[in-house]
Amino acid sequence: YLGVWYEAERSWTLFEAGTKCVKTNYTQTSDGKVHVQNEQTNRLTSVKRVLVGEMKQAGKAAEGKINIKYSTP
Image (cartoon, rainbow, N blue to C red):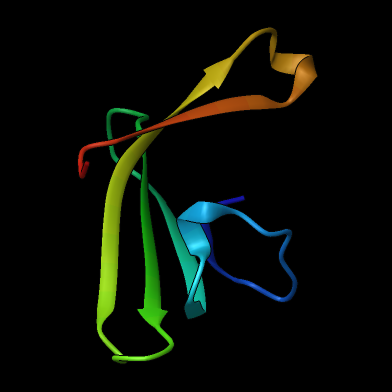
Protein backbone atom coordinates (compact mmCIF):
# COMPACT_ATOMS: atom_id res chain seq x y z
CA TYR A 1 0.00 0.00 0.00
CA LEU A 2 2.98 2.29 0.49
CA GLY A 3 4.07 4.57 -2.32
CA VAL A 4 2.45 7.10 -4.64
CA TRP A 5 -1.17 6.60 -5.77
CA TYR A 6 -2.72 8.65 -8.58
CA GLU A 7 -6.43 9.26 -8.91
CA ALA A 8 -7.92 7.40 -11.88
CA GLU A 9 -11.60 7.92 -11.02
CA ARG A 10 -13.53 9.65 -8.27
CA SER A 11 -16.84 9.83 -6.51
CA TRP A 12 -17.91 13.39 -5.85
CA THR A 13 -16.69 14.79 -2.53
CA LEU A 14 -16.65 18.37 -1.30
CA PHE A 15 -12.97 17.91 -0.37
CA GLU A 16 -12.00 17.45 -4.04
CA ALA A 17 -14.47 19.82 -5.73
CA GLY A 18 -12.76 21.86 -8.47
CA THR A 19 -9.50 19.92 -8.34
CA LYS A 20 -7.37 17.91 -10.76
CA CYS A 21 -4.11 15.94 -10.68
CA VAL A 22 -4.87 14.37 -7.31
CA LYS A 23 -2.24 12.04 -5.85
CA THR A 24 -1.42 10.57 -2.45
CA ASN A 25 1.93 9.40 -1.11
CA TYR A 26 2.04 6.86 1.74
CA THR A 27 5.41 6.51 3.51
CA GLN A 28 6.39 4.53 6.60
CA THR A 29 8.81 5.85 9.19
CA SER A 30 11.33 3.76 11.14
CA ASP A 31 8.97 3.73 14.15
CA GLY A 32 6.19 2.12 12.05
CA LYS A 33 3.97 5.17 11.57
CA VAL A 34 2.45 5.74 8.13
CA HIS A 35 2.52 9.33 6.89
CA VAL A 36 0.05 10.49 4.24
CA GLN A 37 0.58 13.41 1.87
CA ASN A 38 -2.30 14.38 -0.43
CA GLU A 39 -1.68 16.79 -3.31
CA GLN A 40 -4.30 18.35 -5.55
CA THR A 41 -4.30 21.19 -8.05
CA ASN A 42 -7.08 23.76 -8.38
CA ARG A 43 -8.66 23.55 -11.85
CA LEU A 44 -9.11 27.33 -12.18
CA THR A 45 -5.98 28.79 -10.55
CA SER A 46 -3.53 25.87 -10.94
CA VAL A 47 -2.52 26.37 -7.28
CA LYS A 48 -1.35 23.15 -5.63
CA ARG A 49 -2.71 22.26 -2.17
CA VAL A 50 -0.90 19.76 0.06
CA LEU A 51 -2.47 18.06 3.07
CA VAL A 52 -0.31 16.06 5.49
CA GLY A 53 -1.56 13.47 7.95
CA GLU A 54 -0.96 10.18 9.71
CA MET A 55 -2.71 6.89 9.02
CA LYS A 56 -3.71 4.45 11.75
CA GLN A 57 -5.48 1.12 11.67
CA ALA A 58 -9.13 1.21 12.75
CA GLY A 59 -10.89 -1.89 14.02
CA LYS A 60 -9.46 -5.39 13.67
CA ALA A 61 -6.52 -6.05 11.36
CA ALA A 62 -8.59 -8.37 9.14
CA GLU A 63 -11.21 -5.65 8.50
CA GLY A 64 -8.88 -3.44 6.45
CA LYS A 65 -10.19 -0.19 7.93
CA ILE A 66 -8.02 2.90 8.41
CA ASN A 67 -8.33 6.40 9.84
CA ILE A 68 -6.27 9.36 8.62
CA LYS A 69 -5.81 12.36 10.88
CA TYR A 70 -4.71 15.45 8.94
CA SER A 71 -2.58 18.12 10.62
CA THR A 72 -3.80 20.74 8.12
CA PRO A 73 -7.29 22.12 8.81
